[in-house]
Length: 451
Image (cartoon, rainbow, N blue to C red; front, side, top):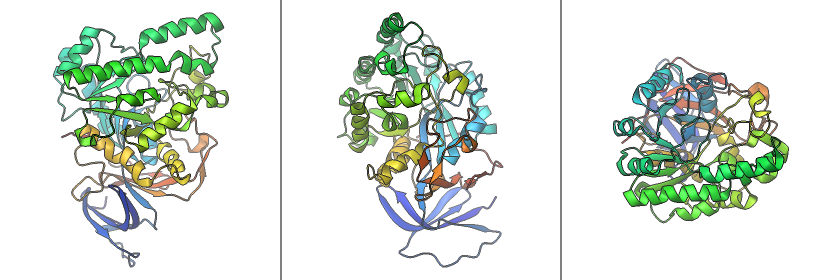
């Protein structure tokens, strides 16, 4: 491994501006950033320094994905930390935060530390793992060190796994006492169960997938999200609501407060920006997610929420299942799909359509997750920060097909789509772990720490 790497001739996107220049990396840290008006002269590579010519491509901070399901331990026939972290770095994601509904559920510190040990041996990207809340594990929650764990995951609506927290007394205690950021999956379980019954009575086992957003409805989302916001305001808790899916929920959030001062923040996922209910006919269960993809009005409002800063973070909720599982009847097909490899390319397609700026994409996928979670020295191209970086070619069309899908499940809702932009290089802690389709697995990622 070269101790010094010099990235030259890059359009550097950072903190609301794009400028031409170079970045020098030394011992895994950004040592210096140079601004210039013209291309660098030719640099002679030697044993002490490796030159990476960005060739006028774009240099972003490495993406931080605050919501993934990498399925290890217990569900590794779908995905595992090694395969999904490879897919992540190929998509420009250098750090991920993974959910606790693995098998067994990571609801105590012994199980949580076992996941950290696995990641230290297998993950090409940096990593953190949420502790899972239950109705009766407050003692474990209170033992958590906020400097070493990204947050506490509370399922206020059951999703994949069996971790529903539906005891109001338990929720009051969690919101009043947790030192960790509280990240919620917010859907009202009672409303969903009533809708399940209604549509099962109407269609029996053959419920059309088009009914999914009516079953996991706007009402279910808003009732649960507003309840979570109410608890957070009552106890001055640090709340982050995951994967917003409706226009109505946006009214719960305030865009006038600087992100660093917000106590209540919100995330949207790429699939809720890309797809709408008209796509169920084409994609079927491949775009079955919880919360459900909803109307075109919701889709447009969510995109506006990103631009207006009501929504703070763009993530993936990467959650692979096998195609055999997905090719099932409505009640048997699980929710979730793979996204980490393609999330940045998808957002860059929006950029190419003039819908969003590069600076806003970097803000929502790099800077804001770092600010929201107080990630230590990552998410920005700053001198003294870890050299988590990605180089992107904005004009290199490529088609998503089974042969280039890196997730273990080997399918994608983007299969057949031609993206205009591609990640060419990804650096994790200054290590060039991905370069034009090839991986260097000599050094694994590191555990994220938090201020």
